[in-house]
Amino acid sequence: MKPTTQFVLSAIAAAGVALIVAGFQTEQTPPALSSGAATSVGRGEYLAEAANCMSCHTRPGAAAFSGGVAFTTRLGIIYSSNITPDRVSGIGAWTLDDLRRAMHEGIAPGGRRLFPAFPYTSFTEVSDADVAAIYAYLRTLQPVRYSPPPNSLLLRQRWGMVFWDALFLHSQRFQPDARRPAEWNRGAYLVEALGHCDACHTPRNVFMAEETGKAYAGGPLNEAVPGGRIRAWSAVNLTSAHNGLAAWSVSDLARYLKTGFSLRAGTFGPMNEVIDNSLKDLSEADVHAMSVYLKSLPPLEPAGMRVPESDVQAGARIYSDHCQECHMRSGRGGLFSAPPLAASAVVQAQDPSSLINVILYGPDEPKDLSFGGWQTMQPYKDVLSDAQIAAVSNFVRGSWKNRAGAVTSAQVARQR
Image (cartoon, rainbow, N blue to C red):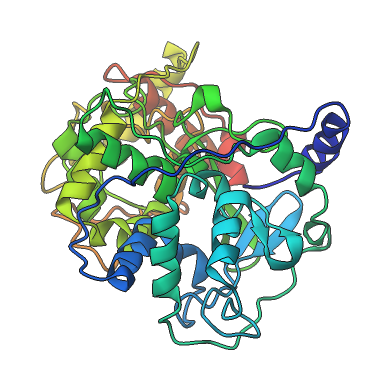
């Protein structure tokens, strides 16, 4: 989703050797979702919620779906498009086939190539029937006359995407697995196609394409914050690895996705708007199906990640003084105090950015969700030094059978 200079140049070079033509697959009936919608427009609204269109196409304080959300990449900033039915600045002049081609092939009217910040690499699996329902819903929106700012200079050069798509886009509709029950297939469709969870939770290669062999093993995220700074996060491992969802039950995960809270964790950071703008509005049956599918993913265990014992012990006193009262000596937290740190996917993530963020700035709990009974965690940016935050991070990453790599003070300093 964040293309680099290497990705463009290397993709062009590789395409001179081999050009892959995406195959067409016969359309199958999409899994039956539990939207309860009686009309195509109602179903389309539900599908747009499942796809979290609101978060990426609505900038703060603006009209819904009018675009202009800034995505920071290594090549600069790319802005999301206006998808209201305004005929000048939005998609009011688009036909159903135009939307279908954009979602399935990453090509807008006139042959303009889209960047995979719009996750067409996942949306390619959305059925034709569901694209038609989404189109019907988008046509009912209030047209908004707004044109996003121009992308950064390098991100106006779209011709290289021809070769990137040839190498990394596999155009295909979702194919149910006949060996699996209907609920599993419904969850797979929501996670893989509409929800495009892999876009954030899968690491990417040098060309910024997803590493399919490490699907859902976690990945880095960037967020633009006021002042022009970039705040780093990490999407957790969603497989049943020890540093992922091994300690979670299906019901734990379903409750978290639906409400932003379970006894295993509470939402913060980029997941806030995913739950608030999308998952909380899905039916309990569909959220449960997603959880069943995610819990079926085989574990992808990171190799060789251990905090040296000396580094673990260096943070013990800091934990005792500042964290133990709420998170407990056992690291298990408490229903009315704090979430568990033992077996936490955030604490054990290969990339410690989210853990560092929480310690520095607090968990920025969502304002629109019923979050649960935990106390608010204070930010420690002005309380602890970079070395102290690194030390306490190493303590929690190496205690209570947690297994993760060491955090350095330099990593903390980069996130201040």
